Length: 290
Image (cartoon, rainbow, N blue to C red; front, side, top):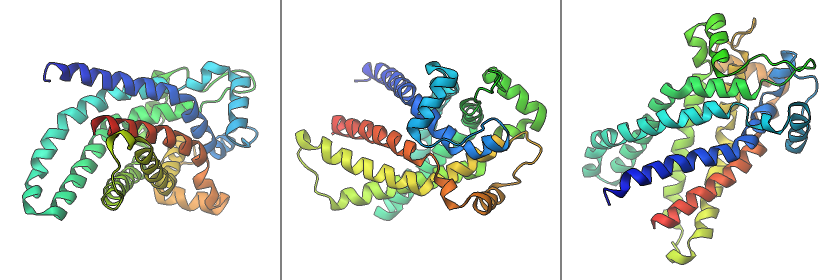
């Protein structure tokens, strides 16, 4: 079993990269719809997208099919440090919070949740500049003259460091980390709670109930935390501009005042479609492990 562990970990990493690359077009469409009002303010976009299909059509018509994967390189690079940090820190955090298991059920749950949240946020702090670069590249639409603002990943970093300094790479980190924390708490809490009340079917029949459960929880958590993601992405797009958002609170207030609550959920439909695929993967893994 120990001999197979490295092979299993490599397969897990390769599978994650392939899965992310497959979903890259939908992820770019989600980011474009989510940030379209900011793009219009900056003059990069002249007309709003009418929906997911319209965004796909306009992007492929103006930039080509390959452009749907723009920004995916940063997401792929992000997998390596994320993977390394998860395996390096997980055991240590489990050891630190393992004492909670001896103190009762609720302490055990709280310890596991704290370990998961700390692990996610520690990893996020390390890879956030890659999230920032992926967002800027995905939202870098072609102008009427056929030019782009950024030539590539390193150009994003060079431009940001020149205009905003090192802290510019962490623009929007607060709302992003808060949304991730709430999302993990919802996933962890809802998944465990619902499973404790739902009768577990036989192993050979467990895929569809597991998929339905995972999809429902993932969809609910995504919708609830989506405004945090929108605020973070809008702040990223505002980095280096003359008029910037001072913090997440100001960004939230300005979006609500100028565009309404609905603007916080732009692109949520595309995010839901991504959640369906994620739920399918989770349920397949759960069925295989069971």
